[in-house]
Image (cartoon, rainbow, N blue to C red; front, side):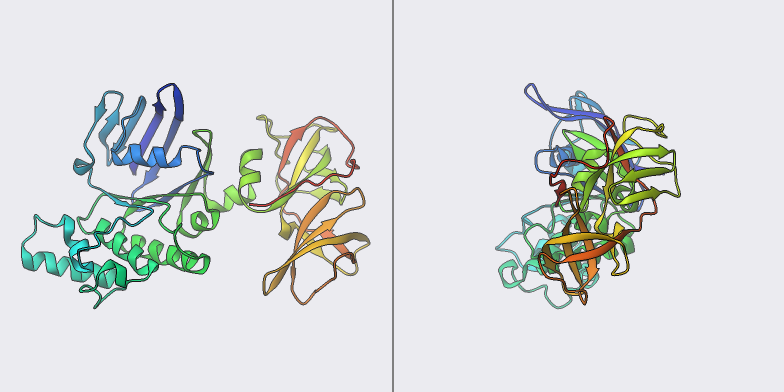
Length: 369
């Protein structure tokens, strides 16, 4: 059953609406993520769930209990919700053990020490309890913040940009570790981030936000491969939008050739299948475009980004449109070189546009996130 339920949440600052009619549910033991750019309303929504802010409309329920509605706000300390902040918010004058045990005043001394010891072991910090926060690395401080949030055995954990102060490698590793800890404790959690790699590494479900609304609530796989609209496709992942014309419900023609999909071609604006001649923008990810020396279609290497095992090439087509291709790094081609490419697309993702020919005037349509 749903552990956290939001129905029609609206939050305003004066006349400015920050959260606009958001609804979703998180199952017990599941990890959800609110993903979006700065200013989309995701942190405000998290603060509403925590009870730090009132809501103008809608309802928030935790384990079936109403905790927020218009005119009702249960105080944060009565919600049994743990919070992990972006800056960790550890007490610098307290030891690691004292930080973790801060919210356990109701327990006796031996019981409190036992719980702190258990949590130190859970987050991989056994033997570090006597240290102070400044003696720990950023990753260790984040583990202490998580242990402190877990200490009172909350119903729900909220994490506000928890890895933003860490370097990229540590961020990826720690996000996997935190997920494993939350799963082992069977804790329901909601994460807020602008980083899709964190979202995909940690979450069972992702809600992509823009303009105070949820654009898509889905699994990470479907958000990436089957974006609900142009914004989600643009914000998540890397890729290009290539102009195309629909041949029938499962085929579309683009400059690179004819795309055939296992599933019916999906357009925006609510239609499930486009009619013949419909103009579309087709989403192509870097892994949709394969380098093949035997292919008859050639593209010019414009840029290259070495990534160790792979190289991300920016390739210019005959029309001048640029696409991305992820290629094993032993295929090391020079800028200006022309290489063979072919398409390998299982599912066509397209968004409706006015009818036009696939051969377009030269323009760059690549995007990076």
